[in-house]
Length: 440
Image (cartoon, rainbow, N blue to C red; front, side):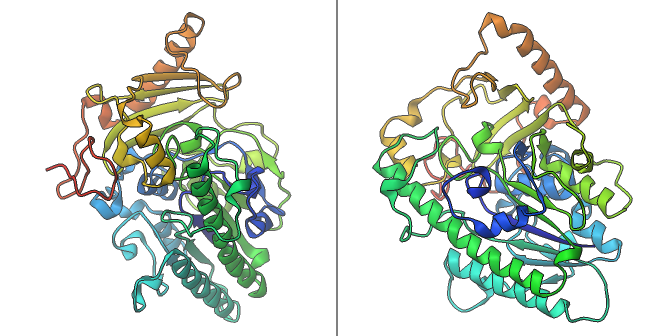
């Protein structure tokens, strides 16, 4: 059985798979015969930590990747990466497009890295990068389909879109766009969201090229597809936040030849993907995995876990926080008691952010702890941390989160978490991640 890991940048659940008015028919084609997980969450709503957790089956503070790889953060042991495990078990491992777990993809266990568009002349934009990725992946799949040997492959196809900077909207009318509930509905945010939608729809077309090649190669019926993204979309209150708008992700699992439910409403984490593939492919499971196989959910079980955990330590700047989320409740704890304003460098620059900057978002003081009843308040607007009716719930969640952090030896319990030597980190008092205001 082959494995295609198809991943996108900063997409959250904002696509047609989750009911949004965004045309992604090629992503939907994976769901035909597959399962869409409606309550899937990343382990950390920033690029490298989320991907590192998915591909090691370990939470960021357990695998060491607590910040961005291109800024000097790294896995404690790249040998824990899924590509290494599959390679040791006879898979041919390839990377096409982006990865965000290590500066050297070969250290992660990939045997081949298909030509990256950045290696071509000039500096391609996001669309050109993803077009080149799609062509390279499709070419490999069509060639592999003609090979007489039956060595299975693990192909990671990573699209840059819909990461910022977005494609300027052409096919999308900003007057007919509805911004996410956590943003004001005005001209700036509608323009920003229209650009996002343009980028998602362009990415979907490139995904279609890869999926069509897989079908034409004759390997559609013996290839497992894991379709996902790293975290929420790059808007204020979303990416790099522990609200559902930040940690909620697209996740589709398609296993050929297997009866699967169309939808699964159970709580799942991206750390569950690694053990799922181990069980599905009959591979010996590493003893230190922190996820749980999703396969029981495909066989009729209603749940595999009672909670998910997520974390942020570093993104562009230091912003340590942890959360526990059950089906009904969520507790978010911030560990930097000296700086409770919005860490602005951790919000990607864009029209929506610039509007909120002018409106005073930089002066807002945030609560150190936040507690939400997600049944009565799914938008996470009413912080119940001081509500007497929720005192027992708060105490229970606080204990469960603390037990998890102790059991996994989270360094946050010992105080501020230092960055690795040489890592680049913005000052918390800065404005944008691209501003060269770095900590010394």
